[in-house]
Structures are given as C-alpha cells and as structure tokens.
Image (cartoon, rainbow, N blue to C red):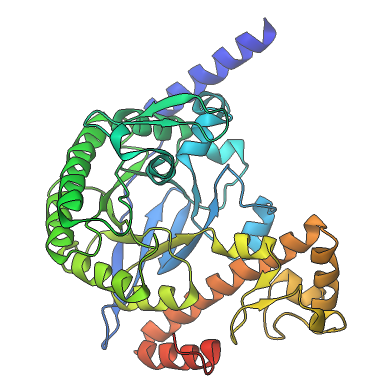
Length: 399
C-alpha cells in the first residue's frame, strides 16, 4: 500500500512539474563559424543542461546505460549528449517505470547533458517482415519473448514523452539496402505521413524537441523530396536516416550530399548511426552537426581499440608484453593508468574491466577527434586535417 501511495505521489509531482515547472525546450541552435573550403560549420545549441558545442559525437546508451560505463565515466570522456533506445526501454523496464522515477535523467542518474531517444524504428524494421508494415504501423515479434507487438508513430512518441528525453525522434521506416526506387518512393511517402502523425501526437513540445527524419536511400530525387517535405513540417531539427545499412561509403556520402542543401541553416543536422572516424570528418565536411554510433563500445567488447594509426586488436599475442599505453598522448583514464599488456590480459581473461577500459578509450578517441575537427573548422584547415588523418589512420590501405 505504501509503495502504491509513493508512486502516486511521484507521478503527481512530475505531472505538476512538467506542466508548471520551469522547462523551456528551445534548442536555440546557432552557427558560429563556417569552414571556408567545405560545408562544415561550428555551432552550439542550448538546453536546460547548458550550452553544447557542435559538431559532436553521442555515445549510445541503448538500455539507459552506455555499456560498462557509469555516468562519471561518460563525463570523463568529455561526452555531452547521449542516445537511448526507445524500443529496448519500451520492452524493459517499460516506459511507465522510467516515468515513475522522473524520466531517463533520474532513472540512469545522468545529469551532465541532454539525452536523445531514437524512435525505435531501426530495431523494429530489423525484426519485421515487409508484409507486416502497413499504413497504421508495424507488426513484429519481440526479440526477447517472441510476443507479437505493434508500434506506430503515436505509440513511439508516447513512449518517448514518458522517457522524458530532451530530443525525440520521429517514427520512420528504415528501408533495407538495396531496394528499388519504387519501394523507396512508397516508403518515404509513408514515413512523411507518419512524421505528421507523430508531430500531431507530440504532447511535450515545451519540454522535448522533436526531430524529423529524411530518408530516400541512394536516390537523389527521393532524398530531395523527403528533405523538402520533412522541412515543411517545421521540426526542431533534422536527421539523415537510412545510412550505414550496408551501402558503400561513397553511396553514404552521396546520400548526405543529396539531403543537406534542403535542410535549414538554423536547425541541427544529425547523421544517424555513423561513427567510423573518417565518416565523422567527411560528414562534418558535408554539413552534419551530430553523430551517434554503438561502434566504440562494441569494438571494445571484442578487444579492439581506435588509434591514430588505425584500429588495433589487443587480443593479438604481440601485445602480451607491450607495457605502453594504447596511445601515449591520449588523456583518457585507460591510457593514463594502464598498459596494453594489462588490458590484453583482462580481455583474454574475459574480465569486464577490459571492455570498460577500452570503451573509455574508444569514446574518448572519438570525442577528441570531434574536438580536433572543431579546432580545424576555426582555422579553415579541415581539408588538410582530413588528408593527414587518413594518411596516418589507413597508412598504405586504400579506403
């Protein structure tokens, strides 16, 4: 009985706070400097958590945790905004549980910066058959229980409202690669209708920004159409979706180029699911402001580390007696306190600390890369920085 009364009081408190509290979700994005040789831009946006610099890389906290890392670890690697996954949190613990605790910031004790939630669409479409996608929404089977579930734009927005993220995403279809022009055209038109439904259902516009998503695959005319019609709905920011789904880097870069000219200068631009170091540089050069990817923590769990001279796998025997840091000039906790030999020992012994140390290093590698990108936009030297970085990172490899 006491627990029930407690939860009722908590729910009433947060209802009052959201209605009458001092929330004002205005991202107030502004461009501070443009690179003279590319479309790169230095900017900042403001939320109740402060001022946030762009370009930026967001670590992914799929289930309200950046795998193996604490909130203090996230701060230490100089991350800012992080991403959480709507689909996974909807299934467990459930959006109502998070809501009862006051939203994701309270639930995971992350109070250093904004949280962005994706719509759940990417995960849903990886589980659904084409025949299960209809105008109303998508039917699919839970990857946990096999239970038949249904998700649509209204439900996605409802879940994200309860998660109380600072930035929510429209529910869209992420079409497979490759697909036909006809399929993609039908898909973007449905996504546009879903975007309108989601925007109409969004009940927290004063406390939560909502981004629209541009699709269109590798087709220039469809990327243009999707961008123009999405912008007409006047979202708080815009995402370029449907990339990093099996296409080549060349096709991905073209998809960005096809969409960027039709996205407003005064709104954030977010490239979804992209985190390869060279893709961050190339994306920024094409006008992108925000990136996210699971790659730094996923690579870490398999013993891989980013370095300026390419990825290395610490499982390799040559690191068994290598008593140097992953990178001597890296300022992350792992590099300042531990050697490759020690981290290799942890990884090969299946000790969780190994994955944690490599995750700390890999995320810091990407946030430091973003810092360097920002510095080179300041000095109009981003092209030269890109060329030098590629030479070191790839060496003799042609990528």
